[in-house]
Length: 99
Image (cartoon, rainbow, N blue to C red; front, side):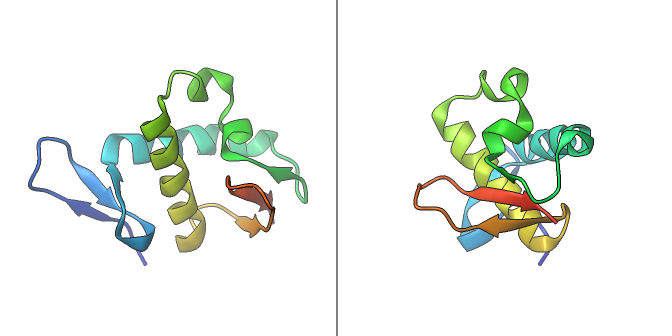
């Protein structure tokens, strides 16, 4: 399953999991940020996306963009862009573990 760019609006969108769409620029920003942060993460430790991205990247994002960043990263994990697996937790936010 690859990401699919969707046109037809002023903002270019990328289709992710469950037919959601996120701004392509945000999708690429999350991807770039995670490539930069990957070497700092420890295997077998559980992380939230907020922790992995870092405060400098995460803090300026508003709530809709934070949700979309989460959707984008979850999509990247499912399609194998990053070597993470989902970790079941009781909280609503997703947790990831580096393989």
